[in-house]
Every structure is written in C-alpha cells, then in structure tokens.
Image 1 (cartoon, rainbow, N blue to C red):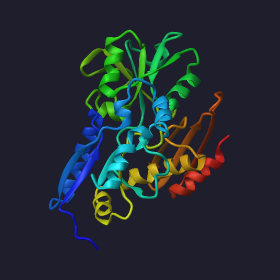
Image 2: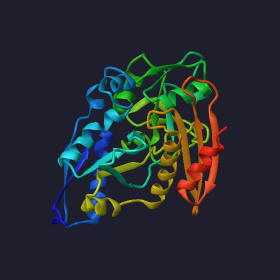
Image 3: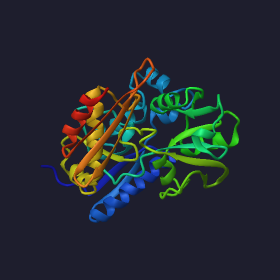
Image 4: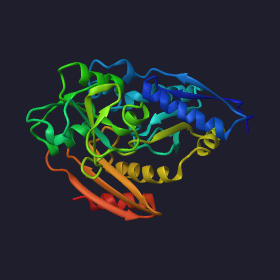
Length: 317
C-alpha cells in the first residue's frame, strides 16, 4: 500500500456556486482531518466555456451526454492525478459513471425545490398567456409545458448570477427557473422559506416563488453535493466517507437507482423526489415521454433504497 498523501487536491468548476460548494467541502474535510492539507484546483469545463448555445448542442458537438459537459474535464483530472476528489452538483452527474471512477459520498442536502423567479408577485399563476420562461433544463421545460402549455419556454444559459441578471436587466424573459439550493447557497434567498413570494437579495424588482416538490418535481440528486474519486483510491475514499451525510446518501441512492432502472441520466426529463420518515423512504416520480404528452407517475415506500427504487419503477403508470 502506498504511503498516505499529506496533501489532497480538491477539484471544482469555477462558477460562483461551484466555489461555494468546494469551500463547504474543504471546511468539512479540514475539520474532520486536521492533519491533512487540502488544496484546490479550479478546472474550466466544456460547459463553462460554451455558453453560446444550448447544453444539448454543446453535448452533441462534444460527443457526450447533456450536462456531461460539466464533468468531463474534472474526470480527466482525476484520471491523471491532477486532483484527488472532484466536487460536483450531484444532479449534473450521469447515473452510472465509468468504472475507473466512483461517487462515494454526499454532503448534507440543501433544499431540493425549483424556484420560479419573476418580475411580479404571484408565482406561476400570475404569468400571463405566452409569458417567456427561461431554463436550460429539459426536465423543467417539460414540467412547465405540462403545467402551463400556454407558456413559451426559452433556452437560458450562464451561471446562477448571470441568469438572475438576464431576467432583471433584459427584456428577453418574463420568468426563469433555478434550483433553490443554488439560490440559497449564493445568498439570493434565505434557507427558511416564507409564505408566497419573496424579494431576491440584490434585485429588488425580482421575486422568488418556491415551487412545492410534490407539484413541480425536482431532479434526482438536486440540492446534493457529490464527491467523486478514482476507483481504488483508498485514502480519498476514507476522507470522503468521513464527511458523508448518511440520510442524504440514502435518499440520493434511491433516486439515482430509479434513474438507472429507467436507463435515464441527468439529461432525461424525469422529476423525482424523496423524503425520510424515520427509517422509511418515500419516493415519488414523474417521467415525461420524449415525444411529449402526459407523464407517467408512481410512488413507493420502504427501508431499502434499492428495493424502493425498483418498486417505484414497477409502479409507473
């Protein structure tokens, strides 16, 4: 067995949100393992460089899956030893990673909902017919079309602050959809949710409405920070496991296994969410057909995340 490394390199994208997630990870690692030095390597991914076209177009041109454009370079850095632990937004990861890598831990999950940002109060019901809603997520687009087929869905690229500014400062969008976790982590909205609309910090003319997860289903793994390592790297495995949050791990295991059974990935238009009632996992899903139309829905309950995912898969109708 090789000697333990005294310095461990954390890999992250360079967006504001990614850096906040990396800082959280490094703080937890530093507290749990004070004898180890944690360094940071900021890596620009294909998805960060190509903000001129949709994610689907970037993926097509790169010969990879949608949103895999956000992890390709991080995995290359893991493979060549430039980094030891990659920090990801878990919803950006494919359901099954290549055998030379492993997703081994997750931090405590942030709020999982999607948030509708608008220029007026009232949330989704206040949007007029034909209102323009920006998102880069196929899942969000499909659900919005399902709930409000009268709206016009437009592609929206850029990091979280850029997307908020595009709504506030241009006339291109009437509303945009973003993850609650990112808005909370960057300080745009508080973690505790008031009733109804709230003003976005720094943008007095932009209002946030948190969409209930049982009405607007989030992505599998949404709100969770995932840690990826080289398969077989015993030291990195021990470090990542040392800050793993068991309850979050249980829930994301069920959600991601359900996606695997669907043969879906982070680009698949599937909404899925879970919660724990003691030791019992409750899992819900909404699966949109590629050709459009009414989604399939299902739900399942149990204590084994893998078994619950299978039950959910078999319950779809």
